Length: 171
Image (tube, rainbow, N blue to C red; front, side):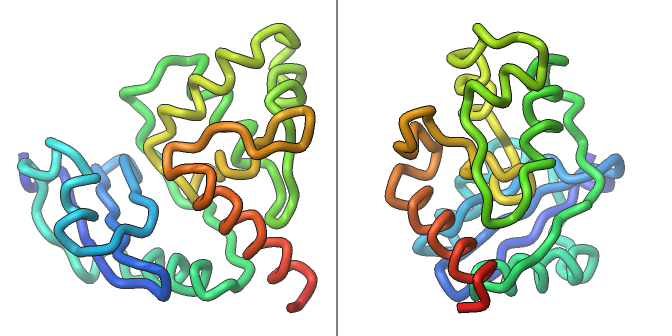
């Protein structure tokens, strides 16, 4: 199976990031971690079946490095969401449409799905997002303007939102 799954870990301005992909697309990314070992660990058990592919991800690595330097970057990469439910895929697809430097509420995401009462379930789907930054779940906030939950912690969510707003304003 190592022929199918590929990965890389690399250093950015704010920490180590990992990427895991199949032949179909990206499977997982990590938020910045304090060490290479921690980025490896965060990629999960599938990493044991993956081969290291430092050159396969060169463009994505450079875009992620630029993103974490505070530059406005887009991520239109192919994703492999085959392990997700159809509800999760719909939530994540809508979340990918949130523009850089902007936010949406859990309620608004649920409304876009035609399910205004599904705010909590939207939050649960976002909590299972395997591709933070690529699927920018950090851009979804509570209706009261508070950050809400985030797999990387509230401080990381605030950091990412602040970084995007500053980059979008041209610093």
